[in-house]
Length: 273
Image (cartoon, rainbow, N blue to C red):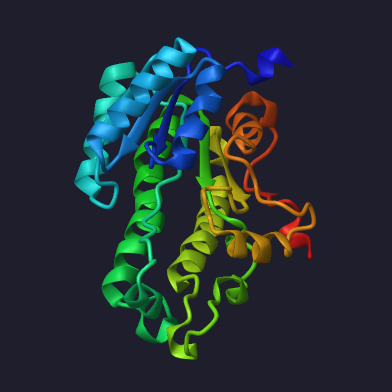
């Protein structure tokens, strides 16, 4: 079993690598011996997180800046990774564009009737187009080299629709009520579709492609929101930040060698109800 999970000698590229879960994904793979490449639009954050991972786990880790919505930038990123390490074995498509909407104006524009086309384009560009471009570059390199793993980070809202009741706030008129934006569902559902397409496209080249659909993670949300969300979850709570590491390790290692085209729900049972 230890050999199945051993990632020594393998190179893992993680987009959105400086973010909350991107770092956790990297930690999971670094602990198993993988060489880590954190890719983020924020160069300094990627470099800092990579340095912390290298020091903590004693593995090689690098932070690289790239705009994954730009085909030329992704091509250059692929060339850089291959020139640095000579290979790529794992890609985690984790990057997402999730604007914060705490202000009243933000709450209004999140509603479908007012949702800006510019925001639609940005969200889809990062979450879906970026995943396509990175998969095209790194997946092709894996296929040419005899195999590898692509893992797309979807969501429980890539399986079910958002329950907009959990975002409601007392005292606001209906047209000002905050909602989960339409792009979140579209991008996360799209990632599940991309997973199935790529899994069959590169199956004969040894590239396995799966998705993970995590539920909500505790991250200093308000008590009222947490209560409304956890009431929808059979386990009665959200996830801790480290609770997806086991799934990441499983799906990126040989422990899941007979698994491709799957979407693994890890949501405390929310999508079961």
